[in-house]
Length: 297
Image (cartoon, rainbow, N blue to C red; front, side, top):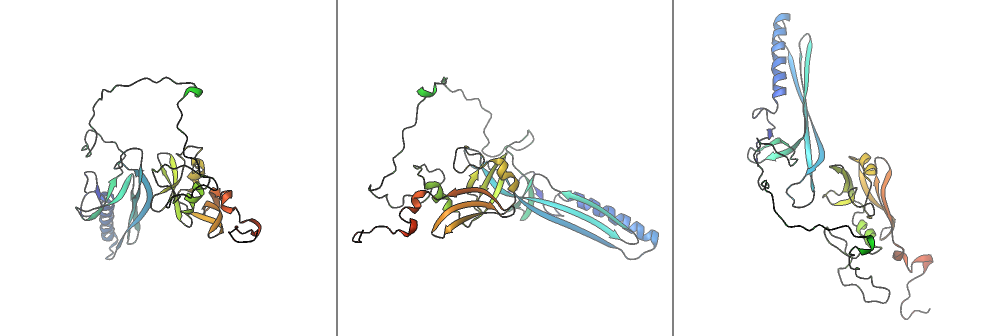
């Protein structure tokens, strides 16, 4: 949907490339004047436009609750206009800034749209769904800080079944999904990481936080997580790898990896590593085979 501040990416429509048109007109006038002064009847004007597309992220205000981001493409247009007779004149310019490349269905053309940062002034149209400036009168209770021993605690989670207990239900342990709360076992983080083996990842920054994401924007590591969390990665460790090629690799047998690492192929650096839990190898050490009923002990 076309927005009021969109910049149509067209020479005919809008003022997007006014700089390019102005430079062309100046070079054309000086070229014609030079041809008359030097009595030349041939000249060449060259117009070049270099287009650079950069992958970036921006706040996503279409998602309710929390601070979400979305992947965007930022365009940059650099132009040069040059003329050749007896002498050569050249002007350069650039069209860049806080814009994202968007296809406008109404005008059937690409536009450079200002990146929405959630702010608008008195002269902008209020976005649909924007909250009115209202003061809500609500009751509240002041809660005093309690000593550590008197603070309410969460109830204990379900215990992990020990050897000899009943088997888990079918479908259990298929991996953690976003927003799902499960009892975390020693093998859960390793099993979660197995989903990303062989995936190409990338490091993105948003509002000072750095994340490692898959191609479909699923977060694998985050600097915004608690430092005690398994998948926490410090911002200073992820920041140098923005734009690099990041991969998730496994070491060991294909069906029984002993380690999973997230590595930067450009820097040959390990960003995250996790070893398989010990229970993965119970009964498989030094060639021992699991005991089956009927086999001699």
